[in-house]
Length: 334
Image (cartoon, rainbow, N blue to C red; front, side, top):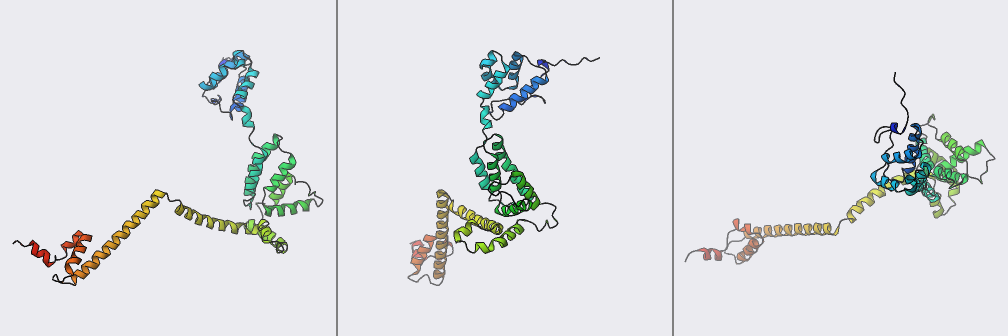
């Protein structure tokens, strides 16, 4: 009959195996998780003695980390709880906790506010990104619930603002507009407005929302100045503006490619063009001279000069041209 295995420091998982923690190399983003995982392993294997808990942690650390831990006071004089706190201190575990600040949330909202949100998928994506930053700040008491609600509302498009507010006021006509709308209420309203199972789902998108808002605000927009029109531009122009931006982007990219030629490449290109131009001019001049020489006799007084110019420009021209009389006379033996 097999006897049950007695749990002890000997039964702790071997480094690199499935249940062992990943080797800790000093990364501040992992130090807290590493310490917590190590404590769970010790608890699961009934390792309670301070000396065993302190010495066994080294097997799950890199050589660099081991050297540091071996010099820590409460490793030399074993005290597991104190050693844990010192490891978190030396490897800056608090730095990983300081992920975001309020200005990070403002930056995120300013970016996401400009994006279209015409489907529930878009909204869910926005929620995930917002909660990643805003939810962390709220959990750490870096911001209040009102600030969390305010920035969540601010990050939504103006189109959704209009429809969400209508939905909330329908449910509660006495809604206090001096306070930011509650996060959960806004989520429910958006899910109602952008419901996936609408009977007109194919036609119900951001364009429909934009056109509705445009018709409701058309009368008031006529009285605004050109600057205010630009700021309060109805969302119906979002998609059109996006297409225009894409066209402008393509044009600007082409212009950038032209402008971004390096000086050396530009010089090489100009030199090549000059060379091609010179070759073309030379070829044209040779052809013109050959035609003129073809219409003259070798006794013509202009023939020698034109012949000389032709062979000066193109030495192979002498293969098809007759030399002038004076050259024939010089070539004859006396």
